[in-house]
Length: 462
Image 1 (cartoon, rainbow, N blue to C red):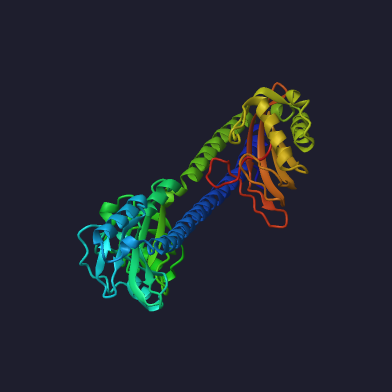
Image 2: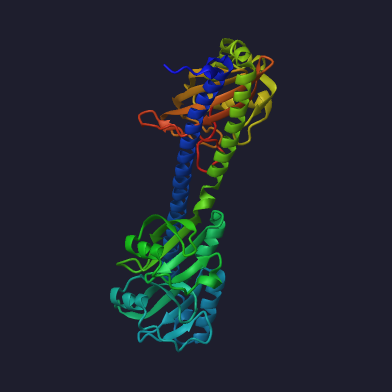
């Protein structure tokens, strides 16, 4: 048997143990970072899909409102052919009052534009327009194609309302051009994610609107680009594709409502991948730095006095942390001043949380309100000098708001890892990392990550 004299040193053995202790933490950190990145992408995708659904729903709302508006306007006497000036004045006042419409006009049966809100366009023929032909054929409110209007020179979705005589015959068609630039207003109100852009493409892949930088993109054909080919093929979905400059983007897309049949336009929301992952990467770098510092300190401590630290009452420190969990499980905070330092530092505070021991009381109170039957079960603890690490399981019925997390009414569970720094017999600092709350019947995976990452779980523990 080979004998290595260096391993006979107690210090070297402790250093090796410290190194072996860091390796699982490093592996967990790398795994956690991967999970956090995946969660960030899922969260960004879900938020983008929510935005796209809202935008499509807003477009449908405009179509339905247009039907009601045109039905009312069709009864106004000013639309008769006797007074074109009065007709134009009426329609101009309507577009001024409802700027969502690029134009409103009256089309005669031969397709000639009799009057419209925009002046000087009365001789324009719109006979070939889809919305006009469909209104004549169906004698009902009709929706046309997405187009760049001949009169407005703007990207619009036109709708038409046929005006019928007493025998049910069409005598003229009233139409409205819904300005797609309204989507820019919607995007501004909903606040697009950083460096994201919103695009409406027609069925041929030509840009109808873009927010931001519309001047540089409107009218450009993107048909031969991989992402547009995929959008036209799949119509609805999510994709991670690099643009022409090699920059990775996350795309969410869905068809906009238009004429019946195949989609005639697509709404696309794109987000840079590095922006989506920025918070997760910052969290990883921060934790990696912490792990490096902790590793160095652990090595120094192991070399200089591991034997001393190993004998400094680890059982008492576990009991102190256990008392903190007892306060969470019972709601009794009378002895909290004897457990937590007055100037306790929470490195992962919840939004709006008070500092110090008062913040601990607040978290406990809100925990009991959100989870009346809730428990924080420290399944195991490890002590390293004045540091206590606890592997905790949160279980309870989620019936109340918990720092912005709405109640689900379900029995939920979350795994967590908490680290506490003890000074002068009290808990002076804490780091709390919990996975997202999941129903107990689900099969959760531990995906620790602090609450700094958008869309991730909040710190829910002690």
